[in-house]
Image 1 (cartoon, rainbow, N blue to C red):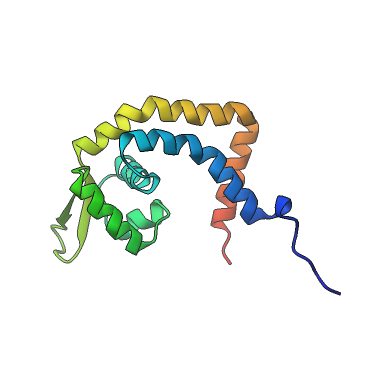
Image 2: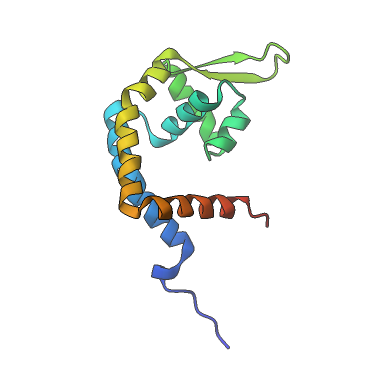
Length: 144
């Protein structure tokens, strides 16, 4: 018996990509006006939310590969949105921290980002929105 792939309309990877594009399209517009990429925004948000940390932690929390993060950190540092310093306990380790300018970018765009998030929530309905977040969280936690 020959098995066939599910229709693309029922493919989880494609459905996730379509949903991501639906959510990220308007966000990309805001970020473009600000002059940061969505990856740079994720790094700034992680640092704003969780404080100064090592690049490995940032990569994990911002869903980035470490080599990509290295380039992103360089650009954010050039824009003076982050600073990097040696760890006081272990000089081999690097600590990354958001600057006041980085915090200002988040603060300046907070209302618009909240409106976009609320729009998506309203389109789906609060209950289904929470269910989706819970299901995606569960999917992320599944161990292979």
